Image (cartoon, rainbow, N blue to C red):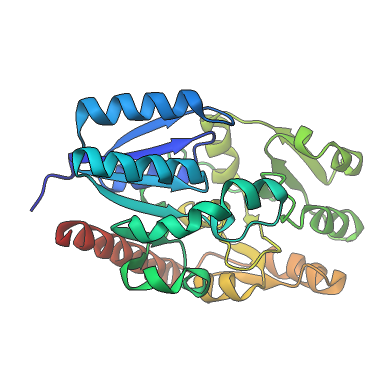
Length: 315
């Protein structure tokens, strides 16, 4: 079997935790360049590294379309294999930036040797001409290191927020503040990305700001449950996988994608319905972890990684 140390994972602008975990799972090397448009620095450094090191496989964190274009030329130069790890934002552009910077590059997916989707529902929006070389790979949450697994569980919940527009954060905050239940919700992440939400801070709602890995680990380890979600279809969240990794009850939005992914482990709520959110809060506050459902998700995750490794060997 091929030594998989010759796999290099490349990310530009922002590094996702998924890419970090995939690097671990594939025993690869991470190459990350924190750069902005027009990605000149990232392009030069990527070219320089690949030409020098000549890795056999490049795994690309998309949505940065120009990275896929550069990988095409690198493939011509050194004969490396290309794996495109496709985030939903690359395939479905809802803003003008995405339409300009990502949409023109989607057609280049046909030049990749392997296309990686994050969930089964996402296959619906993968271009037809590359579906035959697409494999679904779940986020490798089993590689998340849990340091404080002996911390006593407390009566608070956590919403690990990115403050992205598709998070139903305001709806959750209002429901927690309105309930008569003695709930407390910590919202992690940089709230300055959505400063208008800070006005909702109360004894029940606490914004933590950015946390170090150690602080985040401690907070999740002591939580009684994790709440997260997205209003977008075809999208999954690392925060949901983190809940599973930490063996915590999980509540997510009832999209088709998330119900397919996390049923029966998670509790699902309709983010448009106040009563449904309130019902979810009552249920999640008394829910206990389900070891059997967690074990099933772990098995599916490992199987998806094995499929990717097999495809890499076949190429």
